[in-house]
Length: 219
Image 1: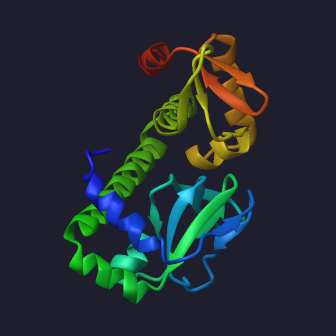
Image 2: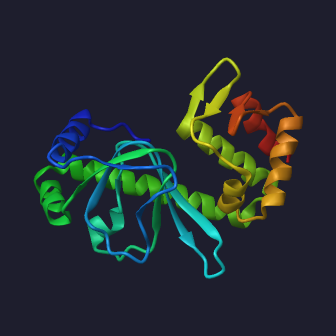
């Protein structure tokens, strides 16, 4: 992510102090696609996934939000109707402010507006990249790219390697890369057998990030 102005983050945090935090348990909906947003959500702790549901009930994950994010950005900045579900992946705390008040805050704090634009651009860039991968790459390569993405954004260095701080189940891998759960499981098992991945309970551990990157060229 591009370098962020610390003052922008401080001003945003100060703005949301006026709004009491709301807690959500893992798996709870913060916002459903069929509901109009109740305001601007600022993620203080935890992780939130944004996704679409197909008519057949299949999940297409669009983005994962980390602390310091706010959503739904396109609705905030452009009045675009929300068509996504926002669900807590872990225990979550968010603050919610009225949209009109937050938009006025952005108008009077250009550094905060720039920060919001950075967040939106980063999310769109990642989304476009993943769509291209869905079209161009095979299941094995897509699985590796997804795990590398998780390791870079949600990884924690340990003695064993880079542990993913949020669970990435075989079902979620299948949702990300557009394949079946069985196919996703096969890709993960292959990486485990090669010594590139290991598991700790439900968490995946990247044993060697560099070697996993090199595996893309061998596939």
